[in-house]
Length: 454
Ligand code: NDP
Ligand code: 2IT
Image (cartoon, rainbow, N blue to C red; front, side, top):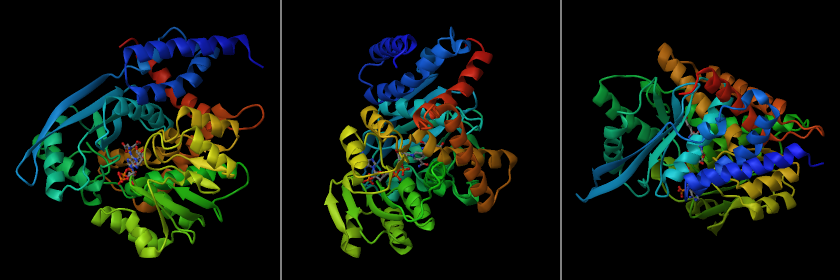
C-alpha cells in the first residue's frame, strides 16, 4: 500500500536530488551514492521528528572541505610528470576524517566525493570514532618502476602532509595503494614532520601496522556473508562463489572462502576474467598473490599456467553461482548483470568493492529478496581494522593476529545486528541497504545535532 507519507517522501527525494545535481554538476558517481542514501534517509527523517529542522541532508552532502593540488615528479626517463592530487575531508562529527587513497587514472572529484560520502556511514557503523574522508590521484601505478612509485608518493605527501595528522585525518589504502605506497608516504610524512605517529593506516607491521589489516576487508566481507547466511541456517561450506578483481580485497576474500569450504571459480582484472571450474585452491591463490603483488602481472597468465578458461574483458556475473563477491570497482553490476545473477539462482551478494552495483541493480537484488549487503557494510572490516591500528598506535601497543581477528569478527557481527535492527521488514526480510544507511546515519546525525550549527 502506498501511503501519503511515502508519496510525500518520494517527492522530497526528487526535489532534494534536483538541487544536489544542480549544485554538483557532472558528478554522476556522487549523485548515485547520495540517491541511494536519500531514498532511505529522507523517509526516515519524515518518520522521526527529532531529526527534522536541522538541514541534515544538506549538511551531510557538502564536504567540510575538498582539497586539490598539483603533484610534480620525475619519471625514469628524466621527464617531468604532472598529476592531480586530492583529499576530500567530508565529515568529522564522530572522529578524525578517515578513509583511503586511490591511485587510478579515472580518479576525479566525483569518484572521491562518492567514496568519502559513503565512508562517513561505513565508519559510523563500525562504532569506532572515525569521520569520513577519501583522497587520491589520477596517477597510474601500472607499469611504473618502484623508484617512480616512490617519487610520486613522496611528491604527493609534500602537499598532503599539511592537511592530515593522527587527530585530524588518517588516510590509508584503496585501489592502487597498498603496503608499498603507504610505506613510501609514511616515510615522507615522518621526514617532513619529524613525528612517528599513526597518521596513516595499512603501514608495515615493523613500523606500527596492525596484524591482519591487509586481510581485513576480504575476511570481513566473508564474515558478514556468514552472518547473513546464518539468518537462514546456512553457511559458506560447499557454496560455489564468483569473485571479481584480483587485488587486495579479492585475494583475501578468496583466501577466507577457501578456508571455510567455499569453491571459488572466478577472479578478474581490468583486462579479463579467468574461470577455473576445479576451483581456485590455496596453492593457486598463492601463485596469484605472487603474480599480482610481486610481479604485478595480468590475470591471463593464470589461465596459461593452470589451463583455465580466460575471457578477455569478461566479468563473472553470467557464471552460475551461489554467492557473488564484487571486489574490483564501482558500477560493475548494472540491472542486466544483477538479473543474470538472480536468474542463475544466486542466494547472496556481498560487496567487497565500494558501490559495485548501480541503483537499478540494487533494486533487482532487493526485489528478488536475496541476501544482499552493500559495500558500506560488507567491506567495513578494512576501515574497522584501520581503526584498530589507530588505537594500537595511540596506545603504543601491538595486538596479535588472533586478538585483531576476534575484534574484526565481533565488529562485523555488530554491524550485521545494526542492519537487522533497522532493516528487518514485517515479512522478516532484511533490507541491508535500509539497515546500513539508517544505522550509519543516526550516530552521525546525533553528533551533528549535539555539536550545534558549525
Ligand atoms: P587493488 O588495487 O588491490 O585491486 C583492484 C582490483 O580491481 C584489480 O584487480 C584491478 O584490476 C581491478 N580494477 C580496478 N579498477 C578497475 C576498473 N576500472 N575496471 C575493472 N577492474 C578494475 O584495490 P583493492 O582490492 O584495495 O580495492 C578493490 C575495491 O575494494 C575498491 O572498490 C575499493 O574502494 C574497495 N575497498 C578496498 C578496501 C581496502 O582495504 N583496500 C576497503 C574497502 C573497500 P587491474 O589490476 O587490471 O587494474
Ligand atoms: O573504502 C575503504 O573503506 C577503504 N579503502 C579503507 C579505508 C581505511 O581507512 O582503511
